Amino acid sequence: MKVPLFPLRTVLYPGGPLPLRIFEPRYLDMTSKCIKNDSPFGVLLIKTGSEAGPATTYDIGTLARITDWYQGSDGLLGITAVGEQRFRLLSSSREPDGLNIGDIELIPTETVRTLPDEYRPLANILSGVLEDLGRLYETLEKKFDDAGWVGYRFAEILPITPEQKQNCLEADDPVRCLEMMREVLDTVRGP
Image (cartoon, rainbow, N blue to C red; front, side, top):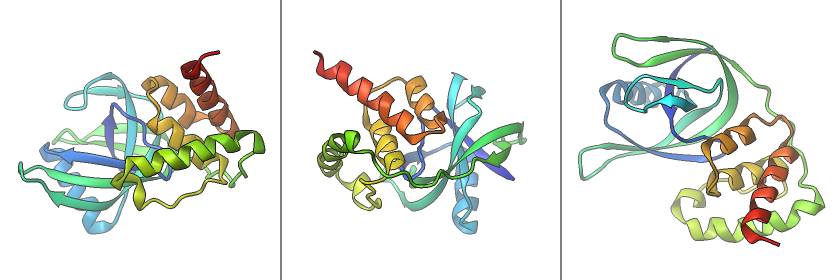
């Protein structure tokens, strides 16, 4: 499967929101095609480089589908995309306009894993936090009984390093992501 790639300094998770302001011609064209064809683009975390120039990325990313767009008062295009399925980048090539196209393989979607009772307090905390975050999360389907969904939401909202966020995305077991997030919360709370 070939998809346009959008290297970013953020990690997108399945089921998570991604607000972006688009101004580069290569991404304006990509966005237009994705909206017209209702097709996804791939989001990968940047290892080195920049969003506006050449960059090397991690190999595991998430497909994003545009769910809303608007023209900002500053003339920039604003979009909201939602993460779909994780993928592995096999190879990439650069188009003449600078857009990267990736040859990817989809990572099979994990079967929904019921949130273990020991992590139920995390779901309760998350429920209150998402309400406070407002618009970005109000339209997302809430799955507080799904271990993967709860782990991903914590990973996207907690102030952790991009590498920690990537580790959570790459974890094949949703409970492993929950363990990482609980460790972060325990560190913040202290003894």
